[in-house]
Amino acid sequence: MRLESMNKETFIDMTKRTTIVLPDAVYEDLQIWADEEGRATANLVAFLVEQAIRAKFPSKYPPAYRRVEASDRQT
Image (cartoon, rainbow, N blue to C red):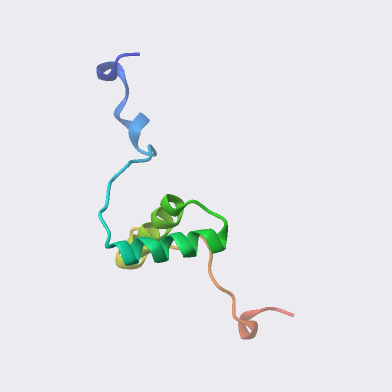
């Protein structure tokens, strides 16, 4: 399929790549953190960036769930 013939909606949920440059110490701490969680460093960075974007633009990215406090629970 040629790119020109694709519907624009096809690309809405497509993931994107980017490159960042970090100080050595920050990268080393990210590696330690990622290792502790058993995940790739790039995966941890993607998660952290997504969380930061969701916090910055909460009306555009509402939480997938609502935290229920003990006092709100029905018995």
